[in-house]
Image (cartoon, rainbow, N blue to C red):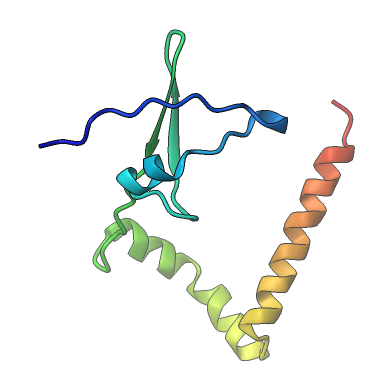
Amino acid sequence: MPDAPLTKVVRSLRGGQITIPAEFRQRLGIGDETLLRLTLGEGDLRIEPVRVVEAGAGSPWLRELYDYFAPVRDEIEASGVSEAELNADIDAAVAAVRADRRLAPR
């Protein structure tokens, strides 16, 4: 027999954030890294977990993308840059772009 529907009233926090009650998260299998799909209807908001299905190793699209970046991967590996250093460089580049966008006139 399915669980009975739950209804709770929650308060919107600063910036429009809400806390999904623990029982709701448990029933829906929502964890810390779960992606959520928000759908705005006519006078209502629907929130549902997104079920991500990983592309299989044989995915043509994934294989094409992997092959496309092969020369870059080879160059990075040959240079001796560690994965941690590479990730730090990527994080710094993303932060710089975001800062530029914040400062750009609109």
